[in-house]
Figure 1 (cartoon, rainbow, N blue to C red):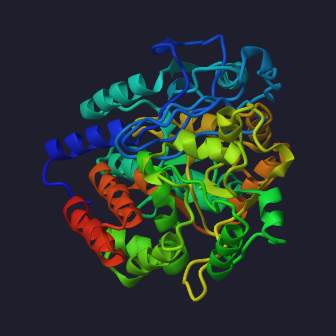
Figure 2 (cartoon, rainbow, N blue to C red):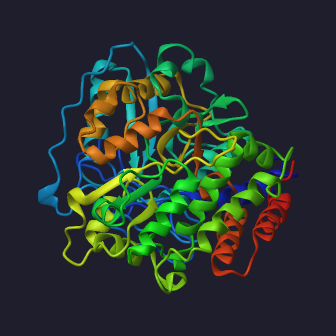
Length: 496
């Protein structure tokens, strides 16, 4: 997107940062330390739309972070329910001695245990192997991070390394000349070590400006017993099969889908996924670069397919007034058969269930079904995660350190500590939870990773999307008008 002046760009970046950056579980203010000595919490990408979705602490070994959102941040808990449940930090492998020199300023938002300690140990190991390097870590609670990052970006002095979710915010920084192009560094072994779809989230205009260290996906979580009661022997693979299963569940007296649409963001996942299945990567890319439109057939058809589901009335009574926590409660209590949600769903369902136990072994997972005749690949996924962007003035040591903390052994460390669903080939063996292994596998198989629209698109456009899709769910906007409303906003927000 072109901006007509530097002032306009900086104002836009300010707005993007405040809206698109995710919330973290910390309760403490910013901490700045050259050698932080205590440890870290799982961080969440941008979340919730009009009401904060407060989600639960993770109880599994893998990362469980909440999704993107548009106008209000979701508060997401991390890793363990209690401090006693927090696992001991795995041993960080030694860093290579590459005779690097210089100072690296690294800002991250991992404010709790065990991640804070793990990141510090990685820095310590690298400095020990490279005595000429000093790594100064600034640990910030998320809101403080958003504010401070905006200030330094406006001054044109970004940190060397800093927390990023990729997508539109990162692209704006790159186009403003605030980030370092590391495409050359990623050629060869380092770049080849990543699963490509998550890595591409950190590209803009064909160049790379950062790398991921954690990436999850949205899919369907389902109650095996309720599916069996309805006579469903296997999860649906196609949209037609999915609608058929909804009808079978209804015939058995079961609420097919849990949805709390008061918060807006949960319902728009269906529209985005359908657009991805129908139009594929090309449809989104064309709508985004303005060679196409969000009113093109793929987006109208996504609304039409969604309306096929809505017309079946598969959601709980009063779903437009239910929150995301209500949605999780219905799933955790076994009162609905499935929900479309990210990898944090099992722990949120457990926390929101009446007995705090959730579904246990009755919980299953399946990817979003393919749409017959669609141009999208059946393995493409939607989701988000965490990564690190590289500031424009970063010295070679910063990129070398980034290579170290994203190597396969350190990715295993993060996975074992419950900090991440890893993105480097070979590190997925460290994910031990069977359900999260399925999520991990879906990310690894994806040829295209559709970042949450809320993270990739400007805040005003993202807000129009969730509002318009809620209108479709409420029956006040037909599919073509949903697409038109989104396109009208895009025409203004995505100027060439």
